[in-house]
Amino acid sequence: MKALTVNLKEFSLPFDRIKEEAALHRRLILLYAVFTGGCFAGAVLFSNSAQAVSNYIKIMVEKLLEAGFSQNLRIISLACLLPQVITALSAFSALGLPLILLCPAVCAAFLSAVISYLYCNFGVDGAVFSLILILPCAVVFFLMLLIGSNEGLILSEIVAGSLFSLKRQGRGELKGFLLRFAVIFTVCFAVAALQAVCISKFGKALLY
Image (tube, rainbow, N blue to C red):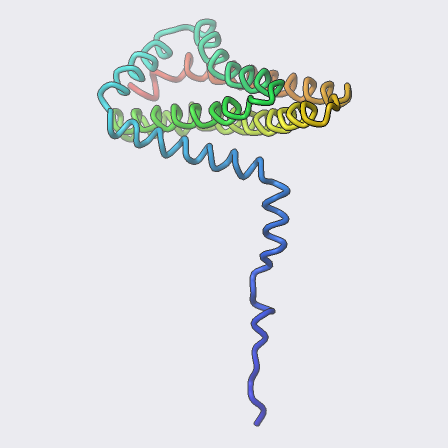
């Protein structure tokens, strides 16, 4: 009877391929890690200093629910576009990396704290409010933010490389960067407008 032999190499993980994929997508992996850390930090911040954070979020939520569409549009569009503007401007600096990474971390922490506040203070109504009026638009916003941050990291690396190699980035790279951010700004403004409409029309009905 022949002995049963098993070739362990057939069952081993392709570590070389994993390393290659990780190196290829290192920026996105870093951004996802920053985003996840921001979500965790927001939940921890809310649980450890719930009263102070709750008071601020309470004022913000009440202001959004009482305001009309135009005022909500100004507030939400500012919140959506400001991180993208900071990311775009930081990309033109070789030292812009900390600010580019800080934007998704802070936004994720704030979103996590808001959702925690709504659930802790309004229970099921708060969860439904978050699920219907916050999360759909937040998913699109964070997708745009991650794309913009990735573009910002790429341009920041090019700027840093040009300082050491004395080579300037080409017009095509800069033109593509500006075009992509124009699309990102447009999508973020559309998302802000949609969320302003939804909160103005259905916010009070869902939360109170």
